[in-house]
Image 1 (tube, helix red, strand yellow):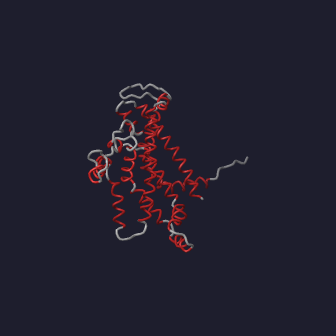
Image 2 (cartoon, one colour; image 1 turned 90 degrees about the vertical axis):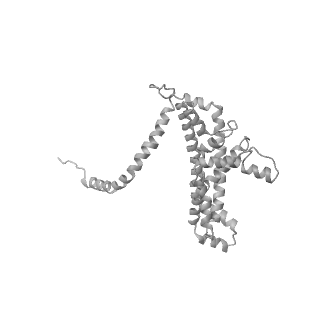
Image 3 (cartoon, rainbow, N blue to C red; image 1 turned 135 degrees about the vertical axis):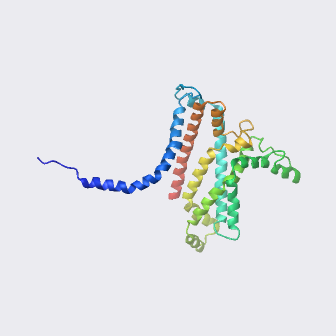
Amino acid sequence: MATSTVPAAPRVQSWKDLRKQLPNYLFILPHFFFFAVFLLYPIFRGLQISFYDWKIMLKEQPFVGLVNYETLLNNKTFWQVLGNTVWFTVMTVITNVVLALLVASGLKHRFLGSDLLRVIFYAPGILSVSVLGIIGIRIWESQLGIINYYLANILGGPRIAWLGDVRLVLPALSMTTVWWTFGFPMLIFIAGLHGIPEALYEAAKIDGAGPIQSFFRITIPLLMPTMLFVVVTQFIAHMQVFAQPYIITAGGPGNASRTVVQLLYETAWKYFRFGYASAISVVLALVMIVVTIILFSLMRRRAEY
């Protein structure tokens, strides 16, 4: 009676392929370990805690299901701080992207002093957020701030309560953040601009296209993958804003500059409601994921045209 046997050759070949790839897996193993311990585990642990009325020092944590999420979605303060965060992010991302792209276009080609200008524009990004907070207060403070000094003492105008006006506090914080952060996207745009062949600009110039036409017909479309990276990373970073309003305005006046992460921090470490704070973090993460997917969809489609 004939018996069927499994060929040994495919098994041997697959084992050889695995042995070839083994050094690659060993290289990524340390990173994957830290990724799993310090990122994946906290994510799933935070999601689990959001279903409990989690309080510190309790041995048994009461399970409450979706009560934390229901309470959060009915909390008017949460919607207000979410609106503050979104408005701050929109202002900061748009200004950052436009300003960084314009500066990068001007510094794309080397000229006398171009390297110095790149360093000057990038330099604020190396400051700590505490130093940024001190600088922000010195700039925007109503009595001793630099801007009001020139407005009142030099130009004879009125002193403006930049940080005390609910309409002006978020734009003031946004401009401070742009000054602090736009150096990084500027460098990314410079790298992306160097990837566009100069022959395209020369051909467009021969066809009679001016600088503005070349910018919108060549630079912007070919820079769209870089634009996608910059917009998404800037959006994710600024949706998590915390230190600037916390140091400069403490979330005031009222709740006008209070952000989601600041509400999360106060809920966890001021009121010790860790379950509710975890629910805030999960909702914020879901908002960022949904908007990021939308940005990828829209900008990828634009890049493929």
